[in-house]
Length: 476
Image 1 (cartoon, rainbow, N blue to C red):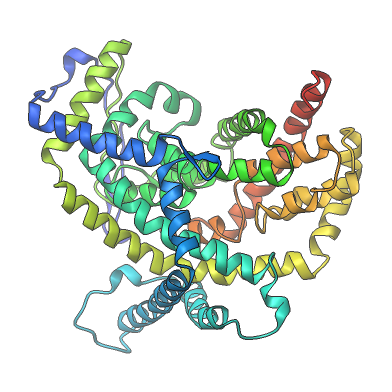
Image 2 (cartoon, helix red, strand yellow):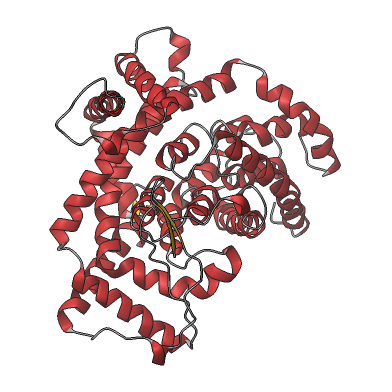
């Protein structure tokens, strides 16, 4: 292993040797640690995974909690979002002035240090937040697709999702869930996507909860040396997925809820295909395999299904035995989630509001989509002039393409529904969140734009093929 002390990065010169079950020192299966792991696993699984009926729909407890809070206490959530964004701007400013020697503070604010660009974005967010909270300015700023959407939907949701999700995901992760899921997922994650099995948990958190929670898990593991920079880049750009619940919202908006299972399966296939391709080519393949903490890579393992189960349970029990208490893990998760929210919420507001305003009030995306009209026509999809801009405008916010095609033919609606949720990278939320959270990777704006374009190039013919197949089978 080599170390760069100046930049505080580590790299591994040689991968650990592959081991079998007989070469592993398995942990003792003691009753206390086993119960601790099982209870923590059950809490996480129930909160994020167990489907329950709610107001005529089927969802998970996590979604119910977040939706109930934002719907029942909108004024309180708005005041909380305002406070968090202003605090993030103020703390970043204090940290940067302290780092530059302008101020001399007795408290450690290194967590809030940032690049000049993100410092500016957080400060601008702190200035915008009171404007949005008090609804100052012109009416066009607060339409359902611009300011009202950004402030009352995205900012409220992300602001609540991260701290609450962090409580439960930290309990799950710190008491053995990460080791258990990660070990069992290795035979799939390693050969297909070239990253650790433990990343399955990040992906699962995004699928069933929110990309915000998935990115929180990634940041947590990255800080402890569990991922290198390339692995973080892969997870944040290929597996920070739209949740299952939101896929349902898209299907309902396009009057295709009866086809939800078909849309979801198509979406899953698209995410997997894109990831398999993109992890093997630039820009992802050029990201250095460096760690920002003492490396803790997964030990290569080979064995039968029973061997994997024994190894997974051993790893989980060992983590539960040495890990925190339930209350300690929950409190630390909440504090970490709140700190992270204060960092990214202002950035999301600033970049996201600019993106949706650009989409709503300029012909930018119509002009960008115009050259794609012949492509859509060549693929024999209906309503090409409407569908073409929808393939591009998703870079601002993934829900906007869905709204553009509400009145189009059924094939066009299916095509855009699957494409929009599969493009993953959009700048109303996940783009700035990823750049701000992983500025030490670094995840750059130009790379995200390039990856959006590359995903779109892969997805357009793939989803078109699926659309024609389903139409031929009579499903559409």
